[in-house]
Image (cartoon, rainbow, N blue to C red; front, side, top):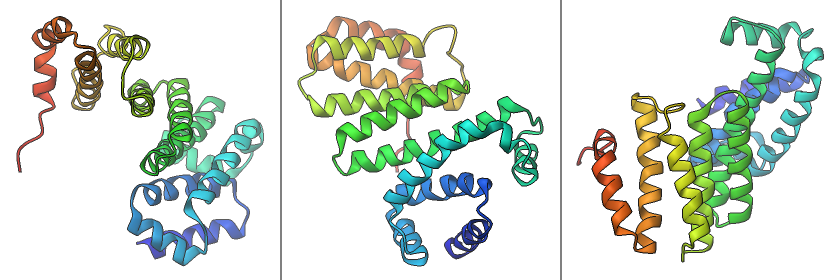
Length: 228
């Protein structure tokens, strides 16, 4: 499978295709997440996956300034139509932002796993901003929650200011504007609620914890992982 992906990337690369930038973003994201895939990609392409991810993010940023040009690119617009049906300026921007957000999120996880905390936080916040820009509020909330986790790792003695940030994210997640009783959203809400509860526990605020558990225990139960 990796061999086929490599073949397609090389083919797109021969034609200096703008669509190739999007393809690279979607190919590199799982390579950053899975070490065995990363090794295979690096071996077959002769690249450093992390360096290539940073390069592709730069190219995606430049694509955002070439939307009008891309709309005259038949190959690129054929991809847009096949994925979104509607093919206008906003949809082209969305395609670029979705690819950038996905790759930034994967690179942020890689940085976090390698204790590059400042870079991880910066990338999570950037991914959140791009997700919000295209109306993907679930991934926006997830990325912001992860950025706060990085802050908590950097300073394990959680202070009032960080607890307030967890509280703000919790309130936004459970607001009428955002909250949806879907499986994916409940999973996101459960994770964000859990982070807020942990921050409160570190501050010894048992009263608020009990109140939140009484109100939202059903959310935690809805996302309960089955025992193996």
